Length: 351
Picture 1 (cartoon, rainbow, N blue to C red):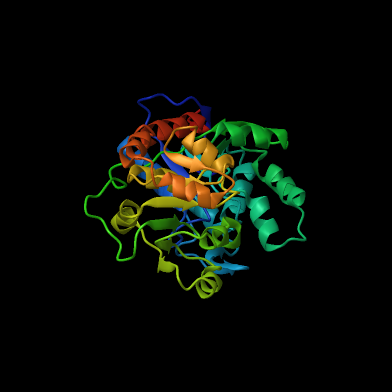
Picture 2 (picture 1 turned 60 degrees about the horizontal axis):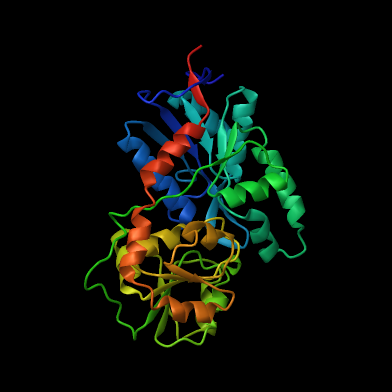
């Protein structure tokens, strides 16, 4: 058993933890999973905990087929075991189901170390979008196997929890999402050099994100796309009128949100949609389809228009007060989400 790992205990409020987060999704990727894990680590440290990430950085990696931006570590298990021994974490959280996640899972099972996992992505639907002949049920079978030994599989919303339980997943617990309202905020004078209204999409540029549905809309003004991904070249070629600005993070991303008139979220498969909260925190109303991710984030609040007619939703969203969007986002505290995460952990303590 790796040094420092003992028996499952109960977390006390004053207890300082060494938390290990294993993730195949990491910088330079710009997506909701990476931002969520970065924000989690920042807030855990603010609470006094020690956090270490095990990521593809500084490892031998190969690109994921059809998605070169995602790098998979090759045979990482031996190095992972050495790193776990040296760090001696109190809690291990496996955030993704890639090669690092599989390696950490195997180590935990070998040494009887309790661990938690999280379900961030509708992976079966993503696989089906790229490889139509692959059965979604086959992928769900793999995911049930992957998450089954975890003491808790964390998901972002009650609706997703119910859906996965209906598919045979067990030990499912809620770990909701918050937003950094200090970074993402209204910025007076923020502007993009394009005709208004500005319709903004932020996220991975990939087939499963359904960005084509947004770009095909007959809307006045300018459509702006921020992000990168395997579909960028083809979409840019098919829609030369749209402005593809590439990836943006931090203050540059906040400026883009604040300068836009409506944030458009065309995905039908996302489990949550952190970008929705980021846009709202900047005072930018949202247009989306009435599907699980947006429904769970907005929860009926009059800060977004959800309609199967996405063009209609976009036009109606223009009339939503920006102050209302900001006020809604402020009520979604990241600290509450971090405490939820801590309460779900399998904490290790000395026997």
